[in-house]
Image 1 (spheres, rainbow, N blue to C red):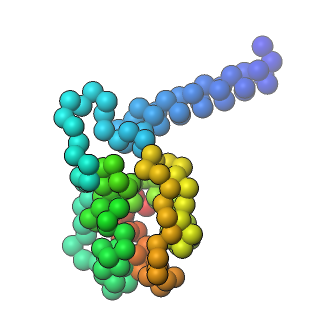
Image 2: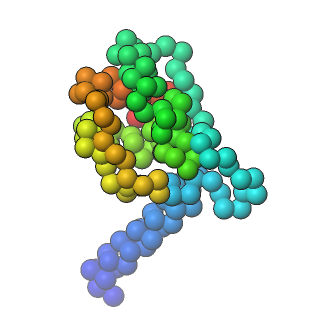
Amino acid sequence: MTSRTVTVAIAFIAVFVGVGWWLFAPGGNEQNPTAASDPVAVAEGSPMVEVQVPETLSGQAQIGQRGFEGLCAQCHGENAAGRQGIGPPLVHRIYEPSHHADAAFLLAAQNGVRAHHWNFGNMPPVEGVTRADVMAITAYVRELQRANGID
């Protein structure tokens, strides 16, 4: 066997193992966050994740919390915990800063976004949202994420 063949085989195995881990690790399959073997049906609109809320929020995040409650919570749930069958949780590793930078939140709010991580359908633009609104809301979401171990 050549070293190139060995390298290709190792790469293939690494990808296979990584995809398997992503699909079957706890919380890894975002398309179906509830285990298929769970006999208890989850009510539509119920929170998708448990969110630990920090004891205090920065001034910017406090403003963002009010904005989130008025503009985002209807779909993304109280404290960004998601709503089963309606909208995804933003306190989730998918939205960590290294994968979805703050600018992604601004673009999603202003332009809407095609569904690509979840099966909730496309997100429409948020009518009347300003850049300042989204910056404050993003500060709130980031503080929630940090309080839940998502950096």
